[in-house]
Amino acid sequence: MQKLREAGNRQTSIAMGEYNGAEYIGMNDSSTPRQNHSRKVSVLPLIFLIFYEVSGGPFGVEDSVRAAGPLLALAGFLIFPLIWSVPEALITAEMGTMFPENGGYVVWVSSALGPFWGFQQGWMKWLSGVIDNALYPVLFLDYLKSGIPALGGGGLAIVGWVAVLLGIFSILPFVVMGFISIPKLSPKRWLVADIHTVDWNLYLNTLFWNLNYWDSISTLAGEVENPKKTLPKALFYALILVVLGYFFPLLTSTGAIPLHRESWTDGYFADVAKILGGVWLGWWIQGAAAMSNMGMFVAEMSSDSFQLLGMAERGLLPEFFARRSRYGTPLVGILFSASGVLMLSWLSFQEIVAAENFLYCFGMILEFIAFVRLRVIASATPRPFKIPVGTVGAVLMCVPPSILICVVLALSSLKVAIVSLAAVMIGLILQPCLKYSEKKSWLRFSVSDDLPDIHTAAREDETLID
Image (tube, rainbow, N blue to C red; front, side, top):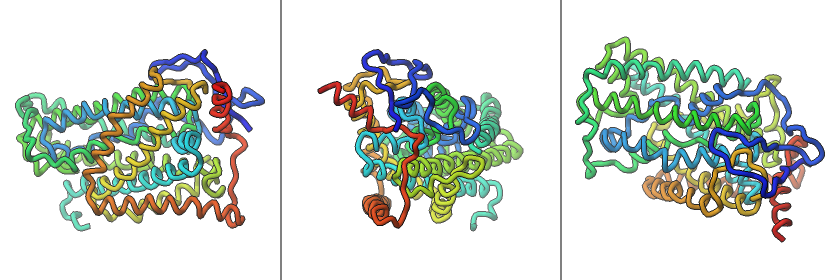
């Protein structure tokens, strides 16, 4: 069995986007533990995969203006990333380079808290991802309906490069719309705010949904070329791209047309484009929305299915989840994730966002606990990227997003809370049932020989302390 080579006190902290050369190696050799199943993902495709895991463009941010007005919407997409996106991206960079394998956050939690909680993390984050993916057919239809009202009734490397092309196509019309809007900008429109009429539940859910899922890329770490160096760099550039991709279209759109808050709902950017540039620009925005939702759907499907593969490789799921096609894609994981999307796509956009956020919050709490605990019990384990703060700093960094999680949960509707808590209870029951099935040999479980022992480093750290 392999392990993480401990680096003692020689390890130094580095800035995001840099690499200190630490290796993820085996006990008996110096080779990387990952098998070369397929062509690996490089930096540029990885940036756009993260972009589509998190954002995909400003489609879906319109509700923030309807909920709170231009001033709070603009302020939210500048302040919220500092409270939530930056800490989540930093933790993903550190943990993702510490454990560069497809299990991602499941492996982090399993290493820190044990396999039971690792399974709960995998269950909640997978279900959250499936719910999230059900949004994109709904969002695509909303944009299509803005142009056709009659419709109102009704190989990972390749994926990475497709994401690059889709990303350029999705962003470009907003750049054009921004330049067209310049003569019509009225800065006083940006200052409109009425604190007494803010729909805080809709506002926070919209911000939260549009700026989370930075950790999802960790479930693809085993498919990334040199993840120790590539992952932090890609997260850094993707963070900049996502924030600008939200803020710039909101800034130009709210400043260029009179405010009608009730009109600002998903799909409204296409109407803004028609007002500013004509029908051709409106259709371009609608086409970009279609491409964006396709990119988000594929990126989320990749993350969800590779997460299941990674859990199977760790023995947390039956080993048939680890089956790959000849192109290296997780066949069973794709089938399970796609079936979940089909069952949920009949719900409304706002209902899906609220349910997804609720489950996602529980998963993030486990991630924060795992991050801090691994700083304590495995402090000497090499981290090719390490956030330059100590244990106290790590705890303090998790406080603001944890408070935000509590606020989002508190504002959830009773219906969403009941459904989400029922889903959590299913996970608590499902894990013992799977273990019983393993004991009775009804299902076959196995741990991949290519993976390191995620508990060895922590045990060695404890030995050094003693």
